[in-house]
Length: 288
Length: 288
Figure (cartoon, each protein chain N blue to C red):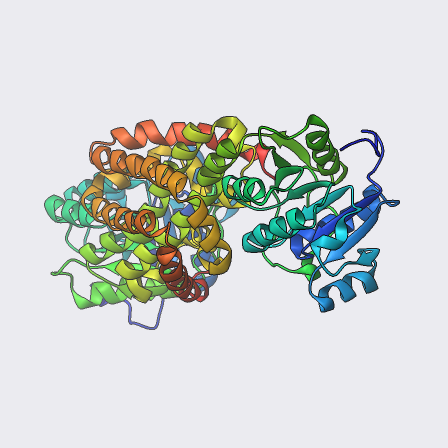
């Protein structure tokens, strides 16, 4: 690992498995970041054909096993796809660094270890868009966004450096953390808002009905936008992170209990509002 | 009540107590809706001077007691101001219809009855803006928005009709309901999102810290925007509606408990996401 390419120069060959929004955006971003890097895509025939035709990739491969000569293989499919690609990578004896972009990391690191992937370093770019698929992929999706880098304890320093170098080339800011830290952070900053949006929409809909909803303002609309999120993405994320999601839900329920108990006297509003406003002021500059 | 003006024609004289965002926007909206109506404002000297200078009102009055000849008196101050204006209106023996724009209605109707206001009909326009004050007031604030009309049981039909006629003239759609229905609906569609935004921001901030917040996406930003709401508005609303807010919080906490229990197996996501998405699809066309 790391011999063929030094820290300052681009990797010669990168494989991307899954050319959806994230995988496709990695391909497009590499075009300007590292124009001499050969980008090889793996996906359904119609998707790779379109990516080739439009120039996002240089070549197509039939499967992960065909990426043996890649310096870096990026698994950019949904979670179940990442897991099965890890098995393929191990069976094919891939020697390059393998990374992924999955939303949950304890599960993926365990799968990479169980499969016996030679050199794996987990990753999770904090970037997305309302619409999925290659059609919505674009260079610049990762600009200025954190790219969480999650190496297993045994990962060689050169492999970690390669993934961080790659993330930086795409315009992202790599931030290293353990799988536990990653999954716990995600349970709070990503999973909890999702579950709250769905739960809030259901509780308000059931109690207020359509007549009550007609009296709602833009605040409810904004706070329930995530309630239209697709099921398929979240079934896997929720299941793989259920224990830490339970912790996050318990923390929120404690807050809501304090709100209920301190509302009549005004004490909760006086204490909680300024505290929430301070956190909010710190959040705003951190997220575009 | 209702003799001087028939249902089709504008009221001759309207008093507005409090020329902030809502009171000021009522004044501006009346300018185009009912240009022949004399609009009399009551507020701090600098505010009425500005409203007179810019032409939003025709005359200033020193107090509620000076509005004896108004066909309609609109109390548009914050809640404590509405309560004390009701006392003034009763002491001055105002004979015109008195209405208000306060966010909580059981409290206001009780105060109007206790004070002995001759003819009171509660109101609550579902319109607002990020910034308060006369400077942000504008004609059109109420266009297409619901205006909840909350008469006490003993209110004369002509008084209710006058308030509904007035709301319609401002571009709003009057919707009649009881004070209980109003406060319960508001606890769910307005109070609950507010408390959730504050509680979510505190729970996530405390657990994730600034490092974790840096990994947040636009979803958390959007779901905690209300966490920057001003304390002073909410202390009164929360205190006056604490019992129904407790009901709304309990309904949400039940949902969150179901989420926690059904997350590992995927059952909750499979059931709750489609249900929330259906409610969300009904909410969207109802709110601009």
